[in-house]
Image 1 (cartoon, rainbow, N blue to C red):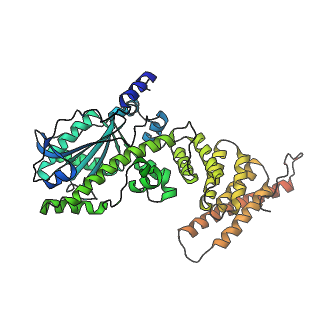
Image 2 (image 1 turned 90 degrees about the horizontal axis):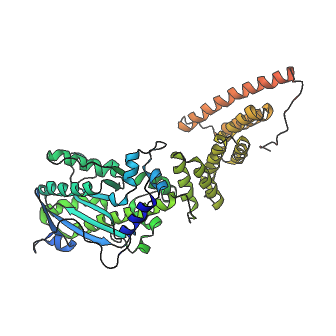
Length: 444
């Protein structure tokens, strides 16, 4: 873990500076030829290395502002389910000066060996804001030059932050590096992909977690000072590039460059929002569905105590009706795992009136009454209630739901048969002294 002195040193280096950002250490760009319409539209210069040339665009933005990553957020974002994070990866993540946000625009959305990344955008925290650099190849012969330049940026900042980059952007780039046969695949110290945490946190409320939707409904992009009116359709981007190669149509590609730029800025803002939500300390104003999503994400990452707290808070704030049953079910499971079987039983009783969760609640209550309360009569009554509910659910179509109901009915009938035997044995051979206490009937 970084010391307090190290953290303050990073903050001092990254704090906002008056005027322009600090000069980039990247090589100077040569002005593009006057006749290059695209270069004029996007303000690009010509980058050059020993593999050739490519267009490059450099911009610094005051927003999104730099946010100091919390250790708790980094641990959760980088952990795979309940598996921990290696010390090497943790140390790399703790230094945001080594982070590189990355997004690509490609000649196809399916990937594969015939797909090129014709525009690669990278960004990093600089002077309290975000430095954005974009590499564009004017034709396929400039790919080596572009990849060489990108490899240099990754060598300086080997921690990638992407949105679906683990599944698409980075495998595609790895493939392109391999196919050059002369430029080695850059080595990453760590890779944070924000897509899957975004799905966990906001899909319940938004449905779609495309970056543009997150900017609109979660990040409040207008407050940050940018907007995406007339943004290009992602599906059209490959065709715009082929049109440019064929007849030099520059205007649509200028919009693609802007789209890529906005994606990078959105990535930075998205990390800041996740960092805020996943940091345990401090009061946050979060909608109930987002809190419930946070609870489920924490549970999958092994943070049971925080997950239960956020789930209870979401229910208290007022979840939509279609999610209340699921929240109560999860709270019951938290209580049961924590050994508080009486509290779990109270949640199961509340779920008896919930159409989606009633059968599961009946099974759990029957187990509680049989094994914990030793009230076989009440357990049998709950089983009979479950069978009546299953009978009302029965349909002629033999689909997945009816098959699941049939399996549940078999389990409940076996339990009911066992309970009747135990009740008969208790009548035939009553104990000398019964310690059973009367339990209220949950189904009256």
